[in-house]
Image (cartoon, rainbow, N blue to C red; front, side, top):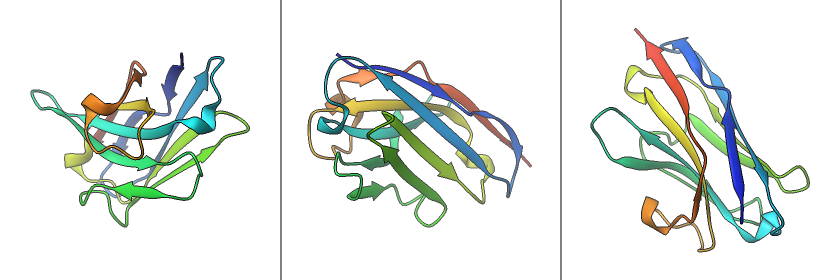
Length: 124
């Protein structure tokens, strides 16, 4: 079992930056899980933004965030981060942290545990 709590969302102007954090807790070894950040805009599906494997090195990004977003993790602290730079209005949505026992799965259905989400709003 893994419990996840996101933080760091907020309101930011286009072109600005935010850093999201996800704190994990539970008895299972954190490095066993791939971790992902998902975004859900109103009326839309929950889409992968970025994911990172348990080795803290292997990553994958959605095209929309490539070059602007950076995912990282600290297994000792059981933390996952998403640094978001050059934010755009279309980055607006609720951002969820999720854990998976699979290797960097790209879809939400392959993630076993979810946080409650944190709102990110990018204004023009």
